[in-house]
Amino acid sequence: MSMSILPTIRVAGVAAALLVSACKLDTLVFSGKAVDAYKLPTTIIPDSLRREVTFRSGNETLYGYWIRQPGPAPRLTAIYSHGKGGNLARETEWTHAEFLWQSGFDVLTYDYRGFGRSSGDSEDETTLATDATAALAYALTQPGVTLNRAISYAHSLGSAPGIALAAATPGLRALIVEAGFANGQAMAESADPLGFPVGWLLRQPLLNTVRIATVTAPVLVMHGEDDVQIPVSQGRDLYAAARGSKQLRLVPRAGHDDIQKVLGVSAFAALVRTFTNAGSP
Image 1 (cartoon, one colour):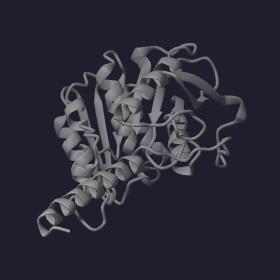
Image 2 (image 1 turned 180 degrees about the horizontal axis):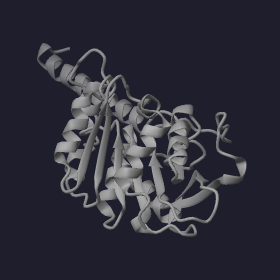
Image 3 (image 1 turned 45 degrees about the vertical axis):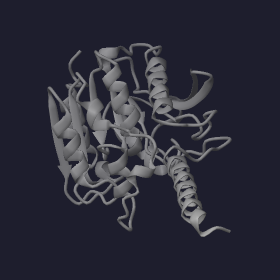
Image 4 (image 1 turned 180 degrees about the vertical axis):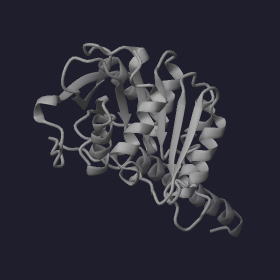
């Protein structure tokens, strides 16, 4: 083999390897745990107040749980967009829904396509945003749910569809982002324990700071000061990028998944209810 073509072969090999790495990184971000049936953790929510539901997103069928408060009194509704790697029945995700329910909200927790029982595959940030829009549309079909009493609550990876939903939906009551990331590159690099600059291997830009700047609803950013998966600096970046009415709550001794538990039900409920003015019609 001619020595002159060896560098070309090496370059092609490196390019192919990087392409494979990029595909794997996107697959890691946009894939969840698929199941044939949900097995919920032990829950404080009575069977009579929760039901498994389905709704369409494009050509796919999404699954979720509609969790309501007892009685007919008006309340706010939280559309909960969860993090990566699991599904709505994972204990972390279900606990988030429980805390919102304990705070007095009706809750729609749902799975993106390819997560849990939902059909299809989550291919990119566009499909995630489409699924969040479909979830809100479903919630608005429920008795008493109106746009000005609906909030987008987003955790971790869910900050991408949750922020996109709020940016595309004028009139939404509020946006709450917990442990959110600034953009795809920052998320990928912070998740790399070796510190390599792997962010550019993620093909999806996930520009949360750009989108949150266009949100007209009030914005609450919550972040654990001890979060090692998505450092608190990214929460500060999201807060800085938001316009209009906004609030930043940094929680000492909280990591990536346990802000609600560290705060406790009473403090968490007081924070989100006060911020969303939940007692006001």
